[in-house]
Length: 185
Length: 185
Image (cartoon, rainbow over all chains, first blue to last red; front, side, top):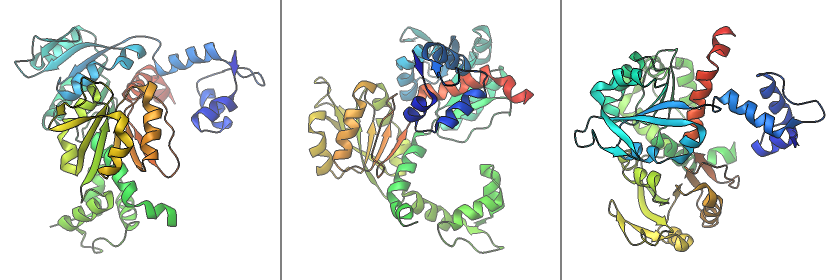
Protein backbone atom coordinates (compact mmCIF):
# COMPACT_ATOMS: atom_id res chain seq x y z
CA UNK A 1 0.00 0.00 0.00
CA UNK A 2 1.27 3.46 -0.89
CA UNK A 3 0.29 7.02 -0.02
CA UNK A 4 0.89 10.09 -2.21
CA UNK A 5 2.27 13.44 -1.08
CA UNK A 6 -1.16 14.80 -2.07
CA UNK A 7 -2.95 12.42 0.36
CA UNK A 8 -0.54 13.35 3.15
CA UNK A 9 -0.89 17.06 2.38
CA UNK A 10 -4.69 16.90 2.59
CA UNK A 11 -4.60 15.19 5.98
CA UNK A 12 -2.29 17.81 7.45
CA UNK A 13 -3.57 20.88 5.59
CA UNK A 14 -0.28 21.40 3.74
CA UNK A 15 0.64 21.47 0.06
CA UNK A 16 2.06 18.32 -1.63
CA UNK A 17 5.25 20.29 -2.39
CA UNK A 18 5.74 21.04 1.33
CA UNK A 19 5.36 17.36 2.21
CA UNK A 20 7.90 16.31 -0.44
CA UNK A 21 10.35 19.03 0.54
CA UNK A 22 10.10 18.27 4.28
CA UNK A 23 10.67 14.55 3.75
CA UNK A 24 13.52 15.13 1.28
CA UNK A 25 15.39 16.96 4.04
CA UNK A 26 15.88 13.57 5.70
CA UNK A 27 16.83 11.56 2.64
CA UNK A 28 15.26 9.65 -0.23
CA UNK A 29 11.66 8.54 0.30
CA UNK A 30 9.21 6.84 -2.04
CA UNK A 31 9.26 6.69 -5.82
CA UNK A 32 8.30 9.51 -8.15
CA UNK A 33 4.79 8.88 -9.52
CA UNK A 34 4.22 5.89 -7.25
CA UNK A 35 4.11 7.58 -3.83
CA UNK A 36 5.43 6.36 -0.52
CA UNK A 37 5.06 2.76 0.76
CA UNK A 38 3.00 3.28 3.95
CA UNK A 39 4.68 0.76 6.27
CA UNK A 40 8.17 1.88 5.27
CA UNK A 41 7.34 5.60 5.54
CA UNK A 42 5.83 5.14 9.00
CA UNK A 43 8.97 3.33 10.12
CA UNK A 44 11.22 6.03 8.62
CA UNK A 45 9.26 8.84 10.28
CA UNK A 46 9.45 7.00 13.62
CA UNK A 47 13.23 6.85 13.15
CA UNK A 48 13.41 10.57 12.34
CA UNK A 49 11.35 11.43 15.43
CA UNK A 50 13.38 9.05 17.56
CA UNK A 51 10.29 7.08 18.62
CA UNK A 52 11.48 3.76 17.18
CA UNK A 53 13.23 3.12 20.50
CA UNK A 54 12.63 3.56 24.23
CA UNK A 55 13.74 6.61 26.22
CA UNK A 56 14.43 6.70 29.95
CA UNK A 57 12.42 9.56 31.44
CA UNK A 58 12.35 11.07 34.93
CA UNK A 59 9.45 13.10 36.30
CA UNK A 60 10.20 15.75 38.90
CA UNK A 61 7.22 16.80 41.02
CA UNK A 62 4.29 14.48 41.64
CA UNK A 63 1.51 17.00 42.28
CA UNK A 64 -1.63 17.29 40.16
CA UNK A 65 0.12 17.73 36.83
CA UNK A 66 2.75 15.08 37.60
CA UNK A 67 0.07 12.55 38.56
CA UNK A 68 -1.79 13.18 35.31
CA UNK A 69 1.43 12.64 33.34
CA UNK A 70 2.22 9.32 35.03
CA UNK A 71 -1.21 8.09 33.91
CA UNK A 72 -0.81 9.34 30.33
CA UNK A 73 -0.77 6.11 28.30
CA UNK A 74 0.36 7.83 25.10
CA UNK A 75 3.85 8.30 26.59
CA UNK A 76 4.43 4.57 26.94
CA UNK A 77 3.02 3.92 23.49
CA UNK A 78 5.59 6.35 22.02
CA UNK A 79 8.47 4.80 23.97
CA UNK A 80 8.79 7.43 26.72
CA UNK A 81 9.18 5.32 29.86
CA UNK A 82 9.01 7.13 33.20
CA UNK A 83 11.63 5.30 35.25
CA UNK A 84 11.97 7.67 38.20
CA UNK A 85 9.75 10.12 40.06
CA UNK A 86 11.15 12.79 42.40
CA UNK A 87 9.49 14.99 44.99
CA UNK A 88 10.51 16.93 48.08
CA UNK A 89 7.43 16.00 50.12
CA UNK A 90 8.39 13.50 52.85
CA UNK A 91 4.87 12.05 52.74
CA UNK A 92 5.29 11.13 49.07
CA UNK A 93 8.92 9.93 49.11
CA UNK A 94 9.04 6.12 49.21
CA UNK A 95 5.45 5.73 47.96
CA UNK A 96 4.60 4.30 44.56
CA UNK A 97 2.63 5.90 41.75
CA UNK A 98 1.51 3.51 38.97
CA UNK A 99 4.26 1.19 40.19
CA UNK A 100 7.02 3.82 40.05
CA UNK A 101 8.77 4.75 43.29
CA UNK A 102 8.92 8.38 44.40
CA UNK A 103 12.49 9.40 45.30
CA UNK A 104 13.87 12.25 47.36
CA UNK A 105 14.76 15.13 45.05
CA UNK A 106 17.93 15.74 47.08
CA UNK A 107 19.36 12.63 45.36
CA UNK A 108 18.45 13.97 41.93
CA UNK A 109 21.79 14.24 40.16
CA UNK A 110 23.17 10.91 41.33
CA UNK A 111 19.93 9.05 40.48
CA UNK A 112 19.62 10.61 37.01
CA UNK A 113 23.11 9.40 36.15
CA UNK A 114 22.71 5.96 37.68
CA UNK A 115 19.53 5.28 35.68
CA UNK A 116 20.76 6.79 32.40
CA UNK A 117 17.91 9.29 32.26
CA UNK A 118 17.84 11.12 28.91
CA UNK A 119 14.66 13.20 29.17
CA UNK A 120 13.30 14.99 32.23
CA UNK A 121 9.80 16.34 32.81
CA UNK A 122 9.61 19.31 35.20
CA UNK A 123 6.29 19.54 37.07
CA UNK A 124 7.35 21.56 40.11
CA UNK A 125 6.11 24.98 41.31
CA UNK A 126 7.45 28.03 39.44
CA UNK A 127 9.38 29.22 42.51
CA UNK A 128 11.80 26.24 42.52
CA UNK A 129 11.76 25.37 38.81
CA UNK A 130 14.97 27.17 37.75
CA UNK A 131 16.98 25.58 40.56
CA UNK A 132 15.73 22.11 39.58
CA UNK A 133 16.39 22.77 35.88
CA UNK A 134 19.98 23.82 36.71
CA UNK A 135 20.56 20.57 38.62
CA UNK A 136 19.12 18.48 35.79
CA UNK A 137 21.35 20.26 33.26
CA UNK A 138 24.37 19.79 35.56
CA UNK A 139 23.61 16.06 35.58
CA UNK A 140 24.11 16.07 31.79
CA UNK A 141 20.48 15.77 30.65
CA UNK A 142 20.00 17.39 27.23
CA UNK A 143 16.19 17.44 26.87
CA UNK A 144 13.54 18.85 29.23
CA UNK A 145 9.80 19.34 29.10
CA UNK A 146 8.56 21.94 31.58
CA UNK A 147 5.06 22.49 32.93
CA UNK A 148 6.20 25.15 35.40
CA UNK A 149 4.40 28.43 34.63
CA UNK A 150 7.57 30.55 34.45
CA UNK A 151 10.38 31.47 32.04
CA UNK A 152 13.32 29.10 32.48
CA UNK A 153 16.86 29.29 31.12
CA UNK A 154 18.91 26.40 29.74
CA UNK A 155 22.27 26.40 27.92
CA UNK A 156 22.12 26.44 24.12
CA UNK A 157 23.11 22.76 23.84
CA UNK A 158 20.05 21.73 25.86
CA UNK A 159 16.54 21.55 24.37
CA UNK A 160 13.60 22.60 26.51
CA UNK A 161 9.92 22.58 25.55
CA UNK A 162 7.40 24.37 27.72
CA UNK A 163 3.71 23.65 28.16
CA UNK A 164 2.04 26.68 29.70
CA UNK A 165 -1.68 26.15 30.04
CA UNK A 166 -2.33 29.71 31.21
CA UNK A 167 -0.76 31.04 28.01
CA UNK A 168 -2.91 28.70 25.92
CA UNK A 169 -5.97 30.16 27.63
CA UNK A 170 -4.69 33.70 26.98
CA UNK A 171 -4.48 32.87 23.26
CA UNK A 172 -8.19 32.10 23.40
CA UNK A 173 -9.21 35.15 25.42
CA UNK A 174 -7.10 37.27 23.06
CA UNK A 175 -8.94 35.88 20.05
CA UNK A 176 -12.35 36.36 21.66
CA UNK A 177 -11.42 39.92 22.66
CA UNK A 178 -9.90 40.93 19.33
CA UNK A 179 -12.15 39.07 16.89
CA UNK A 180 -12.79 42.33 15.09
CA UNK A 181 -9.10 42.84 14.39
CA UNK A 182 -9.17 39.87 12.06
CA UNK A 183 -12.48 40.37 10.36
CA UNK A 184 -11.99 44.06 9.60
CA UNK A 185 -8.30 43.84 8.61
CA UNK B 1 8.23 53.91 36.91
CA UNK B 2 8.89 53.30 33.23
CA UNK B 3 10.37 50.50 31.18
CA UNK B 4 12.09 50.89 27.80
CA UNK B 5 11.53 48.73 24.71
CA UNK B 6 15.17 47.69 25.18
CA UNK B 7 14.46 46.39 28.72
CA UNK B 8 11.40 44.50 27.48
CA UNK B 9 13.31 43.09 24.50
CA UNK B 10 16.09 41.75 26.72
CA UNK B 11 13.63 39.95 29.00
CA UNK B 12 11.91 38.22 26.09
CA UNK B 13 14.92 37.73 23.81
CA UNK B 14 13.54 40.04 21.09
CA UNK B 15 14.84 43.23 19.52
CA UNK B 16 13.61 46.63 20.79
CA UNK B 17 12.20 47.31 17.30
CA UNK B 18 10.07 44.16 17.48
CA UNK B 19 8.67 45.19 20.85
CA UNK B 20 7.77 48.67 19.59
CA UNK B 21 6.24 47.33 16.38
CA UNK B 22 4.17 44.67 18.17
CA UNK B 23 2.78 47.16 20.66
CA UNK B 24 2.09 49.78 17.99
CA UNK B 25 -0.23 47.28 16.30
CA UNK B 26 -2.62 47.82 19.21
CA UNK B 27 -2.39 51.62 19.45
CA UNK B 28 -0.26 54.34 21.00
CA UNK B 29 1.89 53.26 23.96
CA UNK B 30 4.47 55.16 25.96
CA UNK B 31 6.41 58.27 24.99
CA UNK B 32 9.35 58.38 22.61
CA UNK B 33 12.58 58.63 24.59
CA UNK B 34 10.81 58.12 27.93
CA UNK B 35 9.62 54.53 27.60
CA UNK B 36 6.41 52.93 28.81
CA UNK B 37 4.82 53.61 32.23
CA UNK B 38 4.88 50.13 33.80
CA UNK B 39 1.48 50.12 35.56
CA UNK B 40 -0.30 51.51 32.54
CA UNK B 41 1.44 49.15 30.10
CA UNK B 42 0.61 46.13 32.23
CA UNK B 43 -3.05 47.20 32.29
CA UNK B 44 -3.08 47.78 28.52
CA UNK B 45 -1.51 44.38 27.80
CA UNK B 46 -4.07 42.71 30.09
CA UNK B 47 -6.80 44.42 28.04
CA UNK B 48 -5.26 43.24 24.77
CA UNK B 49 -5.03 39.66 26.05
CA UNK B 50 -8.56 39.86 27.45
CA UNK B 51 -7.37 38.98 30.97
CA UNK B 52 -8.63 42.22 32.57
CA UNK B 53 -11.99 40.48 33.07
CA UNK B 54 -13.39 37.11 34.09
CA UNK B 55 -14.32 34.34 31.64
CA UNK B 56 -16.83 31.57 32.25
CA UNK B 57 -15.11 28.28 31.49
CA UNK B 58 -16.44 24.72 31.30
CA UNK B 59 -14.27 21.62 31.63
CA UNK B 60 -15.37 18.46 29.87
CA UNK B 61 -13.85 15.26 31.23
CA UNK B 62 -12.67 14.96 34.82
CA UNK B 63 -10.05 12.24 34.49
CA UNK B 64 -6.37 12.72 35.32
CA UNK B 65 -5.80 15.74 33.11
CA UNK B 66 -9.12 17.35 34.01
CA UNK B 67 -8.40 16.98 37.73
CA UNK B 68 -5.01 18.61 37.32
CA UNK B 69 -6.60 21.54 35.46
CA UNK B 70 -9.22 22.14 38.15
CA UNK B 71 -6.36 22.51 40.66
CA UNK B 72 -4.34 24.83 38.43
CA UNK B 73 -4.34 28.09 40.41
CA UNK B 74 -2.93 30.15 37.52
CA UNK B 75 -6.29 29.89 35.69
CA UNK B 76 -8.17 31.71 38.46
CA UNK B 77 -5.41 34.31 38.76
CA UNK B 78 -5.81 35.10 35.03
CA UNK B 79 -9.61 35.29 35.26
CA UNK B 80 -10.47 31.88 33.79
CA UNK B 81 -13.16 30.58 36.14
CA UNK B 82 -14.23 26.96 35.74
CA UNK B 83 -17.98 27.14 36.37
CA UNK B 84 -19.05 23.71 35.14
CA UNK B 85 -17.51 20.26 34.90
CA UNK B 86 -18.97 17.51 32.71
CA UNK B 87 -18.35 13.79 32.56
CA UNK B 88 -20.17 10.69 31.35
CA UNK B 89 -19.18 8.50 34.32
CA UNK B 90 -22.22 7.93 36.58
CA UNK B 91 -19.90 7.57 39.59
CA UNK B 92 -18.57 11.09 39.05
CA UNK B 93 -21.79 12.88 38.08
CA UNK B 94 -23.21 14.78 41.07
CA UNK B 95 -19.89 14.77 42.93
CA UNK B 96 -17.86 17.92 43.56
CA UNK B 97 -14.28 18.67 42.56
CA UNK B 98 -12.72 21.73 44.26
CA UNK B 99 -16.29 22.86 44.99
CA UNK B 100 -17.47 22.55 41.37
CA UNK B 101 -20.26 20.09 40.61
CA UNK B 102 -19.77 17.43 37.95
CA UNK B 103 -22.69 17.37 35.50
CA UNK B 104 -23.92 14.75 33.09
CA UNK B 105 -22.41 15.42 29.65
CA UNK B 106 -25.76 14.56 28.04
CA UNK B 107 -26.99 17.98 29.24
CA UNK B 108 -23.98 19.71 27.70
CA UNK B 109 -25.53 22.09 25.20
CA UNK B 110 -28.32 23.32 27.44
CA UNK B 111 -25.97 23.87 30.41
CA UNK B 112 -23.34 25.73 28.35
CA UNK B 113 -25.98 28.18 27.19
CA UNK B 114 -27.64 28.59 30.58
CA UNK B 115 -24.32 29.46 32.26
CA UNK B 116 -23.01 31.69 29.46
CA UNK B 117 -19.90 29.59 28.97
CA UNK B 118 -17.43 31.29 26.62
CA UNK B 119 -14.42 28.96 26.75
CA UNK B 120 -14.43 25.18 26.92
CA UNK B 121 -11.58 22.86 27.88
CA UNK B 122 -11.73 19.40 26.30
CA UNK B 123 -10.10 16.69 28.43
CA UNK B 124 -11.88 13.59 27.12
CA UNK B 125 -10.44 10.50 25.40
CA UNK B 126 -9.46 10.87 21.73
CA UNK B 127 -12.21 8.47 20.63
CA UNK B 128 -15.06 10.78 21.69
CA UNK B 129 -13.33 14.16 21.34
CA UNK B 130 -14.66 15.17 17.90
CA UNK B 131 -18.26 14.42 18.88
CA UNK B 132 -17.90 16.55 22.05
CA UNK B 133 -16.21 19.37 20.11
CA UNK B 134 -19.09 19.37 17.59
CA UNK B 135 -21.63 19.69 20.40
CA UNK B 136 -19.68 22.53 22.02
CA UNK B 137 -19.47 24.37 18.69
CA UNK B 138 -23.20 23.80 18.09
CA UNK B 139 -23.85 25.42 21.47
CA UNK B 140 -22.21 28.59 20.13
CA UNK B 141 -18.90 28.45 21.99
CA UNK B 142 -16.12 30.16 19.99
CA UNK B 143 -12.97 29.16 21.89
CA UNK B 144 -11.73 25.68 22.88
CA UNK B 145 -8.59 24.29 24.46
CA UNK B 146 -8.10 20.58 23.76
CA UNK B 147 -5.94 18.06 25.59
CA UNK B 148 -7.27 15.12 23.55
CA UNK B 149 -4.36 13.46 21.70
CA UNK B 150 -6.00 13.58 18.26
CA UNK B 151 -6.59 15.97 15.33
CA UNK B 152 -9.89 17.81 15.77
CA UNK B 153 -11.84 19.97 13.32
CA UNK B 154 -13.64 23.22 14.14
CA UNK B 155 -15.27 25.80 11.80
CA UNK B 156 -13.09 28.74 10.79
CA UNK B 157 -14.92 31.17 13.10
CA UNK B 158 -13.98 29.06 16.14
CA UNK B 159 -10.53 29.17 17.75
CA UNK B 160 -9.05 25.96 19.08
CA UNK B 161 -5.71 25.48 20.81
CA UNK B 162 -4.31 22.01 21.35
CA UNK B 163 -1.92 20.80 24.03
CA UNK B 164 -0.45 17.47 22.97
CA UNK B 165 2.07 16.23 25.48
CA UNK B 166 3.13 13.28 23.34
CA UNK B 167 4.09 15.68 20.52
CA UNK B 168 6.10 17.82 22.96
CA UNK B 169 8.04 14.69 23.92
CA UNK B 170 8.58 13.84 20.25
CA UNK B 171 10.14 17.29 19.73
CA UNK B 172 12.66 16.33 22.39
CA UNK B 173 13.40 12.84 21.09
CA UNK B 174 13.73 14.33 17.60
CA UNK B 175 16.32 16.82 18.85
CA UNK B 176 18.26 14.17 20.75
CA UNK B 177 18.20 11.87 17.71
CA UNK B 178 19.15 14.52 15.16
CA UNK B 179 21.59 16.64 17.15
CA UNK B 180 24.14 16.21 14.41
CA UNK B 181 21.85 17.74 11.82
CA UNK B 182 22.20 21.06 13.56
CA UNK B 183 25.84 21.04 14.49
CA UNK B 184 27.12 19.93 11.09
CA UNK B 185 24.74 22.06 8.98
